[in-house]
Image (cartoon, rainbow, N blue to C red; front, side):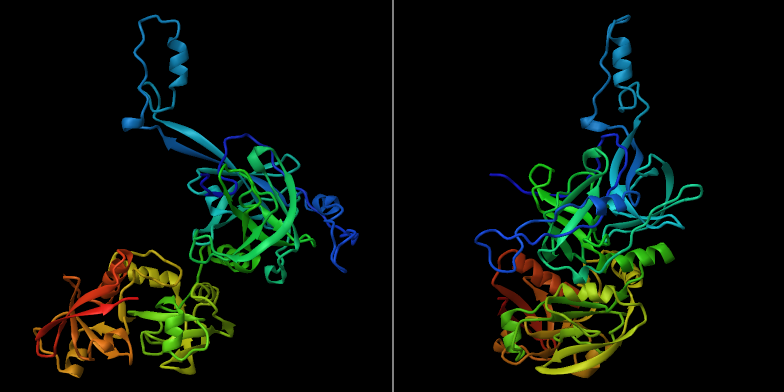
Amino acid sequence: MTTEVLLRAARKTMFAATALALAGTMAVPVAMAQNAAPGVAQNGPASVADLAEGLLGAVVNISTSQTVKGTEGPGAVPMPQLPEGSPFQDFFDEFFKDRGGERGGGSQKVQSLGSGFVIDAEQGFVVTNNHVIADADDIEVNFSDGVTLKAELVGTDTKTDIAVLKVDPKGHKLTAVKFGDSNNMRIGDWVMAIGNPFGLGGTVTVGIISARNRDINSGPYDDFIQTDAAINRGNSGGPLFNMNGEVIGINTAIISPSGGSIGIGFSIPSQLAVGVVDQLREFGETRRGWLGVRIQPVTDDIAESLGMKSAKGALIAGVIKGGPVDNGTIQPGDVVKSFDGKEIDEMRDLPRIVAESPVGKAVDVVIVRKGVEQTVKVTLGRLEDGEKLASSEEGSSEEDGGSEQDKAVATASVLGMTIGELNDETRSKFGIAADVNGVVVTEVAKDSAAAERGVQAGEVITEIAQESVSTPKDVMDRIGALKEQGRKNALLMLASKSGELRFVTIRMD
C-alpha cells in the first residue's frame, strides 16, 4: 500500500542550478465541446507565454550553503586501514576527506536550492520560505540574467514558513511583482506557478485552484490554497500567480509518495502572507495579536446544550493567567461567534484572525454566554509577549495556534464544570478549610455530566484517576490523557469545604 508523505515542495536538493523565472497574461477561449453545458468553457488558456515573459526577472533561485559536522558515533564510516604504500591510499584519503572519518576535517559543506521572488526592486527585498534558508551560513540570490547577489536575512516566521531576504540592487536593475488578493480567488480559477524544480532552472506550470482553506497540520495558521499546477522539489518559496500576474500564493508543500508532483500542491495565501512580510520588513520579527485563551471545537452536543442553532464558533476552555482577558471579559464556557466583525465558523479560524489583528487594538467580540448572545470589547495583547510569559511560568513557549495548551490557566471549563485556582480569594468565597488542597469547582452547568453526579460549586478536585491535581491545567491535562487512552469515564476524588472526601465517576463523551 502506497503511503502518502507530506513533503516540502522544493525540499533542498543537491543539483547545481541556474535560476529562473518566467511569467505573462493570457486569453481564455470559449470553445465548447459538442455536448457541453451552455456557458461552460472546455479549453484551458491558449497560452501563458506573454505572462511568463513579463515576469521573467522577478522570480529567483535561492541557493544556500551550510557547514555541517561529520557523522560521529554508530553511523560514522571509519577510514579503512590500508597496507603501507597501497595504490588505493590516495583514493581513500580523498573519499573520506570532510566526511568525519579519521583523516577528515569532521565537517562538510551542504548546498541546497529553492525559489523566491522580488517584491521591492528599489530596496532589494525578496520573499521565500523559511525552510529554504533555515540554518544556512550563506544565502545567494540568482537572477534569470545570470547575475548572483549575496543576500542577508531580514527576518523569518516559522509559524507560516515565510522568510524575507535583502540584496543590494546597486548596479543591477531588478524586476518586482506585487501581491494580489487571494480572497478574490475561486475554486477553478487558473493559476501559474514559477520556480526552480530539481535545480533545472526557471520552470512554468499552469493549473487551477483545486481547493481553499486547507489545513495540512503544518502550523498554527494553516489556510492553504490547494492547486494542481505542478510543484516539485525546488519550487518552495516560489510564487503562485493569478492571470493578472499578481502573487496570490507562496508555494510551500506537496503531498506525494515519491517527492514529485501528483497534482496536490499547497500555497500560503497572499491574504496571510502580506501581513507577515510587512512586519518582517519593518521589525525583523512578527507582532501578532493575542487574546490569551484556550479553545476547543464546538460539537453538536455542546451547541445543543448552549441553545445554539448550529455547531459553529470556538469554545473557550480556559483563560490564560495574566493574559488580555484575565479580567472576566471572556470566561470559560463562552463561545466566540465573531471577532472584529469576522465570523468564526470553526475553532481554527479564531487563532488566525486574532494573530492577524494589530497588537493593542480594541475589538468587538460576539460571544454566547449561558445561552445569551452578547458583545464584549477586548484589547489585544502581543502573542510573543504571551509566549515569554508562558516560558517564565511554565518553562515552555510553544505556540499551538491560539489554544495555548502549554500556558498556565487561571480558570477553565471541563466536564460541565468551571474550575479555578484554590487561593485565598476562593477559599474565602466558598469557606474552604485551609488544609484542603486541589482545584476548586466554581460553577456547575445545569444538566451536565458533573451535575448528574451531584458535583457542586465549592467542592475541590484533589485527584483524577488517582493522580493529584493542583492547577486547572493539571485537571485539563489529566482529562485529555484519559481521553487519549480511550477512557469513557474519569474518576475524581472530591473534597468538601471541610475536607471530607468522596469519589465520583464522570462520563467524558
